[in-house]
Image 1 (spheres, rainbow, N blue to C red):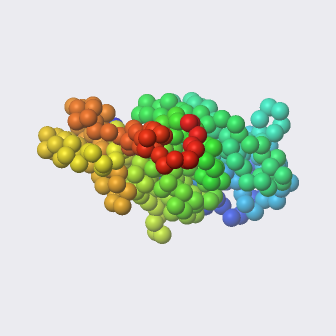
Image 2: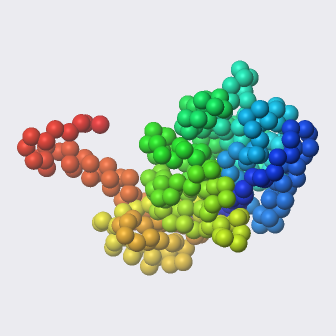
Image 3: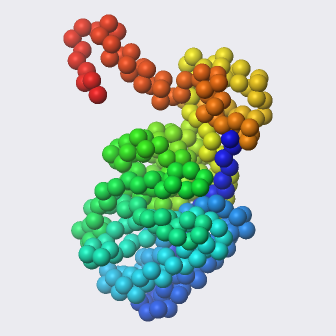
Amino acid sequence: MANYIKISTIAAKTPTTNPGTSQDAVDQMIHYWQGRFAQVLPDQPDLIVVPECCDRYPAHNAEESQAYYQLRGTQISDYFASVARQHQSYVAYPALRQIEDGSWRNSVQLFDRGGISMGFYNKNFPVIHETTEGGVLCGLDAPIFECDFGRVACAICFDLNFDEIRQKYIDSKPDIILFPSMYHGGLMQNYWAYACRAHLVTAVCGLPSGIISPVGEITATTTNYYDFVSATANLDCQVAHLDGNGDKLRALREKYSAKVSVFDPGHLASVLISSETDEITSAEIVEEFAIELLDDYMERSMAHRRDPQNMEEGLLLPTT
C-alpha cells in the first residue's frame, strides 16, 4: 500500500563565528539550530536530516574544538531529541562524539518520534586527516534503523566513494539512506540510490541537497534561494527492468490506472513502480503481473553468462 512520508532536509552551513569555548558557544549553536528547524517544522515532517558535524564551529582551532566538545557533551543531542519528541518526527543528529574509551567517532545518531535514541552509525571511511589530526576512528558496522515507516541506513561524506559499504546496503535493502555530508558526491549520489534501490536523502553543508529516488532521479532539492526543502516520498515501490515487462506494465496500468505509478527516468531501461493506493502494495502488483524485478533480471543474466554453453571457449569466470 502507498507509504508516503514527509522528509525535510536542511543544507545549512555551520556558523562562521568563533564564540570561544564557554557555555555561550553551546547556547549559540542550539539557538542557531532552533532557527533552522523552524523553517521546516511547519511542514510536519516524518524525518529531518541535517549536514555532517552539524554543531561544529569551523573557526575553532584544534584546542578550542576539543574544549568546546567536552563542554557540549550531550546538550545539543538532547536538544535534537527534544525536537523529535515535541514534533513527533524522526531526527538525525550528525556530530563528532567521544566514546567511553576516549576515542572519537564521526556519527549519525537517529532519534525516534518519542525522542529516544535508536543508536548510532559511525562513519566507516573517515578522510585520513580526520584520524591523524582529529583522532576519529573508522566505524565497522552499517546498521539498519527500523522506523515505523521503513528501514533507514546512513552514509557520511567520504563513505560515498567506497564499494564496501555500498555493497552492505545492497544486501540489507534499506528503504532510505541518509547522507549528511560536507562533500557533495556528484554522480555518486544518483548511483548509490540506484545501486541500493533506495531513496537517498542528502544534507550537504552549503550545497544542493534533497531526495533522490531509487532510479536515480532528483525528486526534491534545495535551491540558491532556500537551503531547506520538504517533500513527500512514497516508499512502497519496486524497480523493474523493461526487458520482458513491456506488455505486463501496460496491463497493470490498464487495470489500476491512477492507483499505480510507473515512472521512467529515461536512458536507464528501468522503471519505478509505486502503489498509489491503500488497496494493494507494489509487491502484490508486481506478483500479480509476474513482473521481473531488476535484481532478479540481473541475476538471471549473470546465470546465463555462467552457463558453459553460452560462453566462448577458454573464458574462465569465478562462480561467485
